[in-house]
Length: 300
Ligand code: NAD
Ligand code: MG
Image 1 (cartoon, rainbow, N blue to C red):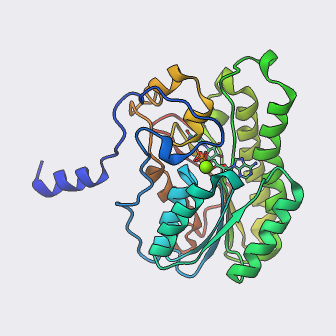
Image 2: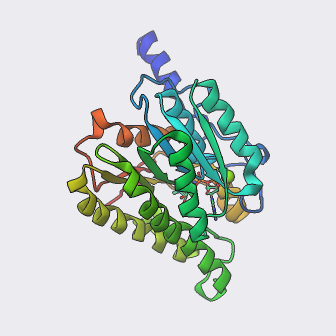
């Protein structure tokens, strides 16, 4: 191997060790600072090149995890970013906003619980007013519970919370956003490997992710004639606050080890898929697709 090959490989090297993570637990919605190790959102590695220059994006769940990495990448590509998150995640949201502003772009902070219809419609209205329009909607907010594992243990509040967060909010936000997107605009939904290879402990969550795939394809057909593209990203196991906040300790200790690449991914390794799908000059003919970022697990 030449020295330059070695150094370009080193530059891509993920920070996740092979296998899993130290035993740890949190309560939902989870906090980045309490994670060991703290995830890599591309703070030190992502280099922008103007691929989203002047676009305005709304990223739900933009405070932490995959959403934070997408916010950093979008801002470094020249986009202004609105971040939606739960009020108790203010600290995480401010940290993400700091990185967006450091990239020279506007960060709009929008706390609120998206399981309420009014929050979704008001959020889109606020973003359009404050950013002067909307070009990209990233439906990334989502929740799962994996500790009460069997169907019989899945109480009504849990099921209601998962469906309202992962599906209702996605439909409501999309309905509110579409009239503002216009030709060249796009929607990126967040699916999961769980849509293809469901875990019994995530029965309800996995069903919402399969639903998101179906929604993505169907809406792409409806909005195509308006020049609006609709796609999804399906991550595999990614090291984010959602995991210690919802998985059993034994799952954390082996998190990602069952993928072909033998490890979990970092949020920084998922963000470039969103940049690609949002970039009109690169993905202008890409709609109705689900892009897997799974460490090698199949998404078909
Ligand atoms: P995360 O906890 O960092 O992000 C999820 C975010 O969703 C939270 O930060 C929160 O702001 C938001 N959210 C949840 N409920 C909400 C509500 N009622 N109102 C407003 N916001 C709410 O975890 P993440 O893993 O980055 O999750 C992002 C997306 O990625 C989710 O849709 C998740 O299902 C999906 N996903 C994650 C993984 C993984 O392994 N981490 C794998 C596949 C898919
Ligand atoms: Mg969060």
